[in-house]
Every structure is written in C-alpha cells, then in structure tokens.
Amino acid sequence: MNFANFDLNLLRVLDALIDTRSTTYAGQRVGLSQPAVSAALGRLRRHLNDPLFVRYGPRLVPTDYALTLAEPVRALLEQAEIALAGPPSFDPGTAEETFRLSGSDFFAEMLMPQMAAELSRRGPELRVQLVDLVPDNYVAKLDANDVDLALIPQLEGPSWMEWQPLFHSSFVLIARRGHPALSEQVKAGRMDLDSFCALEHVLFSPEGKLEAMGDAALHAIGRQRRVALTMPVMGGVCATVAETDYVALVPQQLARRMKRKLPLDVLLPPEEMPTPVPLIGMVWHRRRTNAPAHRWLRETVAQMMTPLNAGEPPLPA
Image (cartoon, rainbow, N blue to C red; front, side, top):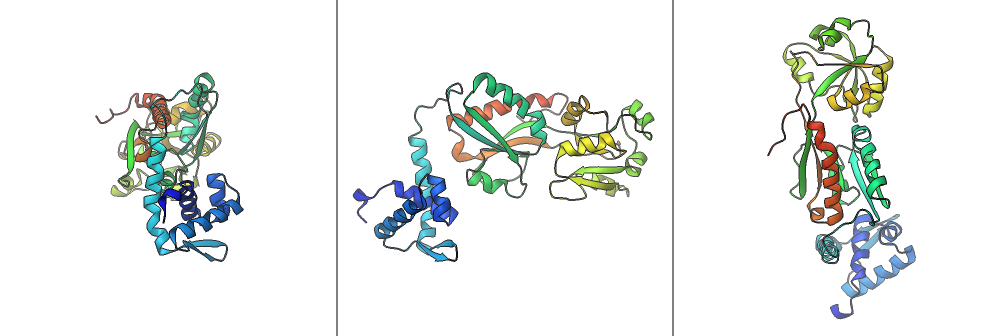
C-alpha cells in the first residue's frame, strides 16, 4: 500500500463498519450516504488487498484481517481526536455539545432539575440527555461512546474505566401518611422488625429481582419480607406507596425530596436489619478524561451531587 496516497478518512469508515457491520449504519455514524460508504469500502479493499468484509444475509462479517485492524484503527482515531481537539478549554456559554448520562430515575429527580437550571443560566447551546441505566450493559455503552458518564454504585470494572465518588446513599423506609398500622412507628421515627416483615413491600428492581439490599440481613436472623410489586423506576415506587398500604426502602435523599411532593412518612428501617450504605459515583472511559468538555461535565455533576452527602458517611480521600 502506498501510504502517501491513502485517504485517512477511510479509517473512520473502516472503524464504523467494524463496529456496525452495516454500510447503512456506518454511513449514519460518519455522515455519509450508503453508496458513499460502499465506495469507500471498495477503496479500502484495493488499498489493503483484502476483502475486509463478506456479506452474510443483511450483515457484513469482517475478515480475520479486518478484525486485527479494529483496535489499532480505533486507537489511531482517538489519538487524532485528542491531538486535533484544540486548546484545552471549554466555554459552556458558546459551546454546542450533547452529553448523555446513564442512570436510574433517581437522577431525574435529584440531578436533572439542577442541570436544567445550569444550562439555562450558562449553557444555552448545551444539551444533556439522561438515558436509562442498563446494569449489565453500561460498560459497553461507555466503550462505544453511546454515553459519556454512567452514574452507578461503586463496582469493579475494566482497566480503562475511571471512577469518581459522589455521595453515599443510605436507605430509609417510606409509607403513606396516615398508614393505619404505623402510627406508633412514625412517632418513634423507626419501623420495628415485626411490622416491617408483616407489611407488603414495593421493590425498585430494574431486572425484576424479588430481593435487594437488606434481605440477606433478614435471612441471617430467620426473617423475611414479602415483596408484592417490583418496578424499574423509583418514582413509581414512591407514587405507589403514597396511594396504598405498601411500604418501600428507597435512598434517603430521594425519600426526603419526595416527601415534599407526596403524602409520605419517612422512617428508619429496623435496627435488626442493617443495610449497606452504597457509594454512588460516576464512571467514564479513560480516553475522555482530559477532554475539556467532558471535564466540565464531570465537574458540574460533582458540584450538584456531592451535597447529597449531608448526614452521610464521609467520602474516601
């Protein structure tokens, strides 16, 4: 191959084809028509002396040689993006950017109203999208640049993942105001174990599981609770509790916020059932760490979220 005559834009097409296995979707990724992508693939085949992809039904299957190019080509493109990013500065007042955050609907309540105010005040051309967190897929979303940040409890991840702690989130119990079985517990500010086990629960469970934090502690003392409903959104859990005799364990920050909107009482869980206090943070791909726009996003999210630590354990140094 004569590198002097090689169009480096073809690397963007090759990267998109390896990732999408489709000339149509690759074109959408790089801003070209499907015929233009097909023509670019023809040029790549001539330059590299390999078919690169073979058609299998509606999809393109990369050859062994194409697969060996995947990581080097992606690394070259990322290095070029960093090298050509310009001065290390970011002005939210003039920038036009779209940021995608992945998180539960906890952040729709606790983060996005503040973010909306910040964008109105300082970033008129910025857009922030909160998308559903898929617990078993957020790593792939970060790796594919489909999301910029994931907001999750602290977990082990691949070596390229960066982590910044934001706040601890203990759990409290919510019940509808005036719940007929809980008048004494509401006065005491804590639910007793017998009431906790006797009442029916609503569980926040994106995957539909019937157990969560705290259940292991119950099993250890020979007790269990009954989960009557599971829901993939915390807002639905709170609304359901406010209108029924069900109860639920939810993050204390969300409980106190929703208490101002819904007829809810907030109680501590039974002393016999210690629950972990998750550390919530944000994760991102290391390749974005030094990008000025991404740094601004992380700093903004951290500024809005770390006050949620009030009354919680201190963050690790």
